[in-house]
Length: 277
Length: 363
Image (tube, rainbow over all chains, first blue to last red):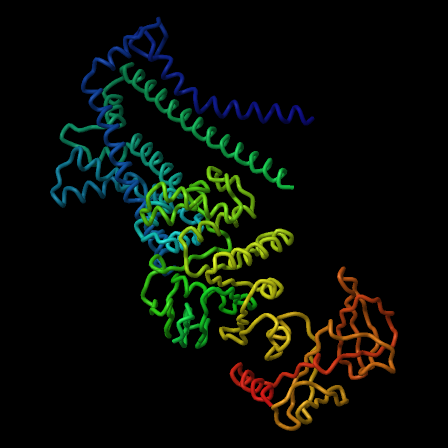
């Protein structure tokens, strides 16, 4: 009985993952199709990939997208970390909760509304649409993410550690740079990666605030897909999928490395404890 | 101000959200002694420590460190260092970097730092542990790292905030001896906060007993144990039998309906007082030899001694510590010497208490 139950649950799991991944693999499969459509597979070819790499406009857009993601997440990480520190050190509880709520509202409000309001805001201020406007809006929607990733690490932090640092002669700046920041570094890194991925695959906000020929990958793919199906888009999607997969695997190995290190430390401590007895 | 005192509190008041934590506290702490702030949790003892360290500001009053007023000097500019209850070590640094933290802040030369860290680690018997991560150290070892880190800065005063409370009994006793020896060797002032009366009695030169934001009594462990000023101190430090009585005359006191010879004096005639008799001073004898007649109610074996609870005909409870067994239900006599009786007046302040003691001791 128990075994069959287990099998059913496995089957369910396989089904769910199949539904999630089949469209992606279908897309990738046809990126190698010799024929121009996704109706039938006529033969294997690298042509669509060659097309992607010879399309300089597309390559520029890929670079721009990466640049926006890198820059916006970097700036957002800086501002967000300072913001988290500010919220953490706000002494009055109602004030702190209000700040946190304002932060969270930005997290849950729909991208379309954020994008539209940024468009109104930029045109009102007379700021030209393009790289600058996209960067600013990406920074803006990334900050709350960073705050949410950093704040729990601050709450985990032992406050008497701060007192101890002061006690040993450190001034406020030294306490921040030598004790607080190293302690919350995992949260900051997590915030940076989250902001990076959010920026990389954002469509709605970018769609509103881009202009003057500046475009990011998601907006470009959207507009090309509307004009008609070209399998070079499949090739591009496949490349992005592989890129994302590499990031995830890389992240997994870093985590695994840390866990192993911790396990090793615990084992050493246990050996030490046994020796002490 | 005498030269010897390194810390002085003058009429210090501390309030949190209009709740008074410390009520007009005055005291002086002398150089090179081991002080203990002893009191129940929430009595304000840790607040005194935090005021000395500079983690909080006094609401009013003056605090002097080495003759200088320090009310407006931040914690990082004061020549005191703290060992925290939870050790507060930096988990992202190894043992060496933890101990060297204060020195590297001071921009000491690397060679000197290495020497100093080696020296203090040797003091706390952790030589060779420099490259360990904090997560690899046991509780007792972390405790030692915390002490080494505080000592590396060569403070004039070391503040210890219940540093032994997280250790098991055996390790705690060991650390008591070590801390005491360390203080003697270094010759600096230690201020130790604890709620454990045994710890306080075992380690201190001077004890401040604190309750509800007041220093109730200060003195050597022997003074405080033998001459508690009031019921709170008598009860908090050691176990006590406390009964109501009346002072008939100098050196004559009446309680449980009988008059006894005692060694206290300087009170009004027939003044209502409280009598303390320590359980270990009471001796069980035959009924006819005893000064009091009691019945044995219960008996507990405590290892070192039996704890025997008796009651007299007035329903007063008498706790006796004896190495000899008693028989439950038996009528026995209790014997004690005149100097075992300690008389406490109601609402006597420490100054009045000391003055009275001096007055009749001079006679």
